[in-house]
Amino acid sequence: MRYRTKLSLAVMTAIMGAVPMASAAEEQAEGFIEGSSLTLLNRNFYMNRDFRHGQSSNTGNGYSEAWAHGIIGKFESGFTQGTVGFGVDAFAMLGLKLDTGDGRYGPGGSINLLPVNSEGEAEDEYSKLGGAVKARLFDTVIKAGDVFPTTPVVHYGDSRLLPESFRGVTLENASIEGLKLQGGRLHAMSQPQESGMRGDFATFYAGVVDSPWVAYGGGDYRVTDHVAISLYTSRLEDAWNQHYAGIYFESPLNDTVSIFGGANYYKAVDQGQKLLGEFDNDIYSGKIGVKVGGHSIALSHQRNDGDNDFDYLRQSDSIFLDNSIQYSDFNSPKERSWMVRYDLDMSAYGVPGLSFMTRYARGTDADYSDANEVYMRRDENGDPLTNQKRWERNIEAKYVVQAGSLKDMSFRVRQMNTRATDFESDLDEVRLIVEYPLSVL
Image 1 (cartoon, rainbow, N blue to C red):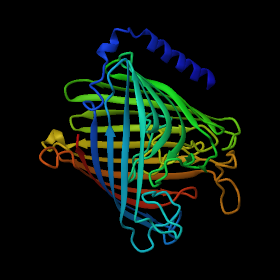
Image 2 (image 1 turned 120 degrees about the vertical axis):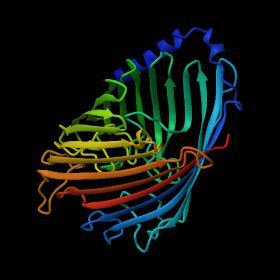
Image 3 (image 1 turned 90 degrees about the horizontal axis):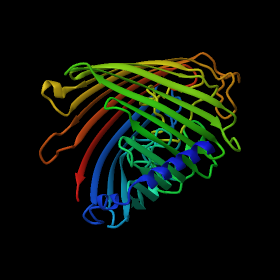
Image 4 (image 1 turned 30 degrees about the vertical axis):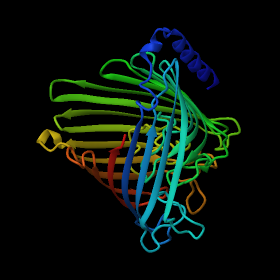
């Protein structure tokens, strides 16, 4: 990890040094005010989960439900003139409870739509307020403060009412055409249902981790118009080193037919004080698909060769695996999974903005026989779970308004069913999401 980090920094330094000084005039910003933007997103979010056998419900009655409205305001300034330009990013977010039913929302669980007070009830409202200062030198942008990284190893989550954020320093460089380099060191996170911006790091499967920081680095490179690759590495101090490699391609065969596919690979190894126990995981996925007009269908396979769950930061999108879907990640030890997915874009039939998606995934052979104590799952007799299976089905419909005063307003309904043996819950879920973005400035 240390060698790769030093190598990445050396490459970035060399790239920056190779940029001609004459490019400073070409890269001058529009100006602090002239380059500014202010956006406002209204997000209305309803979500319920019916735990078919009462498993994992945070209410004790086998059912969780919440309806809330979020307002997300973001300001991004331009950069001041000069060789080094300076600017600021800021955000203010408000979450409002509309309804949580009678005893249908409580502490714990994984809905994470609203915070819960000391009496175990959903808060009526909560807010997030933060920002970052930024500087630009040629094609390199550095930000310090509250940031939203977007890499396969550290990626902020935005699948709840308000988005997740991190606090620290990030760097992006785009000096070479087709290549985007990213790096950062973060010392706190704020999960979607939290108001505080200095929360401890937490993972999906192990919970809160007493780690002082997470760092990452790597890049994405578009090899050709049809092929892109990614390489990243990260460290959650005293917990893990994670390395990622990915490739994606899309090749048109004619005006209406194209094939697409890709592969993703993660290597996760314990590090430092081994706060999450000892592990050495390899997990990978691959997919192949065909698109014909407005139709596309894809088949993917995924496998975890490790002895423990492949873990990642809680409520984040830091898992670029093909079979990580609405509820299940299909990332248990030794688990193998297959998925088929179908998408329909109704633009091809004269209804732009309307789309449908459905997918079915099935996982088998999950085996906790050699898992460490952090990730171990046992049966009622205390024996490690073996030969575990699950399946999940998702259906989604979405419409985006194409014109008029409500342009870009979107309506989405997502329905999910999953069934599993002893290691996971049987549940049905519905999400209704309405979003209305506004460009104020």
